[in-house]
Amino acid sequence: MKRFLVFLVFSFFILSVEPAMGQCSICTKTAQQLGHKPAKGLNTGIIYLMFAPFAIMGFVGYRFYKMKKPD
Image (tube, rainbow, N blue to C red; front, side, top):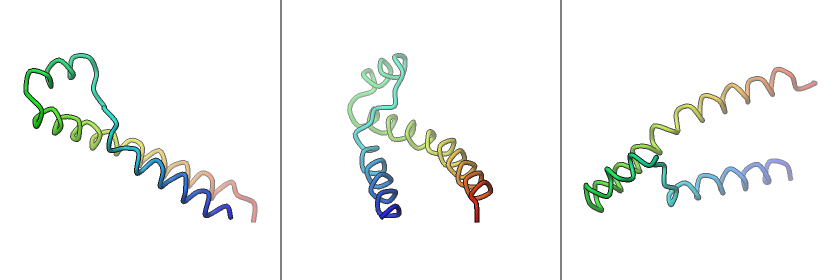
């Protein structure tokens, strides 16, 4: 049951990334000037670059959890 819950939460976060807008106010103004297609590419690039720190922290958290988990 615990694995299913973890899978469900993980799936929710993976599926909810697509509509997210990862822009600051300066990037929003720049994207508005570029047009629709380049703005979508800018959003995708920002979210792509945001993935690496989250993946690293997830790995570190997982290793910490495995290390502290009682046998």
